[in-house]
Structures are given as structure tokens and as C-alpha cells.
Image 1 (cartoon, rainbow, N blue to C red):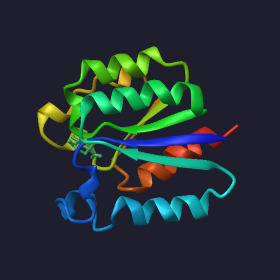
Image 2 (spheres, rainbow, N blue to C red):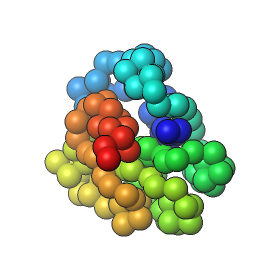
Image 3 (cartoon, protein in one colour):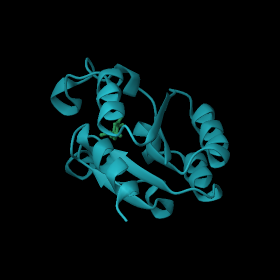
Image 4 (cartoon, rainbow, N blue to C red):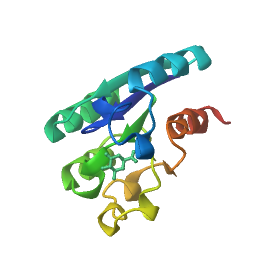
Length: 139
Ligand code: DQA
């Protein structure tokens, strides 16, 4: 099983960005733990702050991976383009969020991704990614 984790804008700052909301661990450190925990799964990671680059990576992933775990961060709430890319590709996409977006501001309640996601995992801290990987492994 080959899975790609895609993180959107400002998630490169995990560990230092709003630690009360997003925790104190960098994604690189957490990703190493995921790779160790899911040794049988081929995990890759991509992050960009640029909307078009996220769309390009989703399109390329269609040929390369069995599934995508996508945290589009703020673009979740604004990007019809990323939503369309999720719809356009043939592989399943699981939408994840670290924080519970529904317990936050109203503008975070809207997602352009959810309608075309295989499923949604929201609000479990970094463990949201762990749960998303598991969602691909359950038979
Ligand atoms: C986020 C939630 C978004 O509303 C926010 O813009 C982010 C991170 C999350 O993982 O909780 O950057 O996607």
C-alpha cells in the first residue's frame, strides 16, 4: 500500500505555530514515527503553501499512490480548485484536520473537499493522520 500525505499552507510550521491548537511536535518528527509504526505501508509526505502546487501534486498522485491523506489547511475552506482536483482523480482521498474545525470559527465549518473525500477525520490532533492511515488498512 502506497499512501501520500499532503499538507497545505502553514503546516510546515507545526511545532511552533499556535501550539495550543496544533501541538508542539513538528510534522517531520511525527512523520518519522508514522513511518516506523506503519512499516508495511509506503508513506510519502508533501507540503506546500501554494494552492496550484497542491493541485499538481494531487494530479500526479493519481498515477503513483493507492490513496491520499489530505490536510489542505486554510485552502479547505476556500479552494474550489483543490476540491475539483480531489473529484477529478481516481484514487481515494481522506480529508484530515488536526483541530476540530467545527468547534472553531464559522468560516472553518465549510469544506470544499469533504463532498468528494472518501472520509473525514477531524479533531484528534496529529493522531488524525494515524487514524487516516488506519482507515486505508482496515479490510
Ligand atoms: C487545519 C484547520 C484549518 O482551519 C486551518 O486553516 C489549518 C489547519 C487543521 O488541521 O486543524 O491551517 O486544517
